[in-house]
Length: 490
Image (cartoon, rainbow, N blue to C red):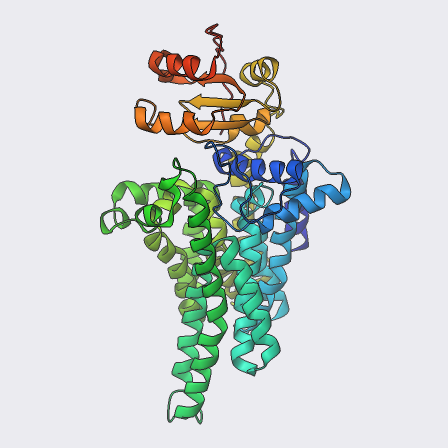
């Protein structure tokens, strides 16, 4: 475990000072640009700025606890914002490990076997790569795992202090990222059902009163976190409703995308995406195959828990099929269950009658496979030279002032260019470039503002109608600058 922890610490430090944000830059730069303007404007309001879809500039998705923490750390230490974001994410990931250690103890694992299991979490390529990202994921994971730990103690001990702690960290988890919290609620529900079954009437001195008391504590402990998450969704919807261009981000419009449909849940294309992420980002296919074989031979006593952990890992992909198929960082919420399942297999191998050296050789082989996967896939992305000083960003910095607004078409509503240039923007979403009513609403919201440039990507380079409308509405000079190299992101 110590060796793997050292490897993890080295790996997350690769490219630490680079402003480049590899891995789902669309989402990372969205979080980063919010933190940047919170810092610049000293705006710590709940309706925090994300200036990429026109005025008003706020489009709150998650509760901004992560952004506030990043900005506070940056302001206190003088650290660059990108490095501050990485440090908060990394810190949250490593702080999650003690709570996983304590939870593993509830399965009856000795301290050494718990460390063996945690070694697979620490060495997981996904956690190395996304623990250093400018994302809310590891903070949501920390609070969610803390909730599970304190929830179990609250039900067992039935003390108000544990209830309060579980309510607070659960509320933080639900506010920061509700989908991560919902996954942990699945685990909490499963654990509670097992308890209720063991304490059912006539077994283990169970009584209707004791069962009712336990159920009441369980419901009471999840009540405040669920209420907090519900309140935030309602509040965020009200703020987003003030911008006529962001109705697609309202909870009603996102439900079908978030939960998917019966067709998408079992779509071959969707599951090919799931498996591609699984074997590219989380675990090498031969490592998983080897662990499965070892489980069949040596881990019979742990089959139940292994099946439960693996089942939870895949169940969340059925619940949120599209989110997990196209956003690999979502797996930060549930990859630890698969890693712990492999860790249980490793512990069983150590407990088997195999010679000690052979048992350790098998475990080391699995870990080397994980390290090799990281070395081949994630490490090169971290080593990309990363000031993103491209022809596009240089040109925009040359022709615009810091207070100017960019109008950008052909790049969906990505925050990459606005973040790299530190300019506010009206991003015209893909497919809406020729919708005159949509464009008119966006342009109308910018009246009285200084629009510095119109940026047209790809096929939108020939959108003369949009160009003429921008010239007419904002008195942009008709001089055209063509930039051949665009800032491409992984």
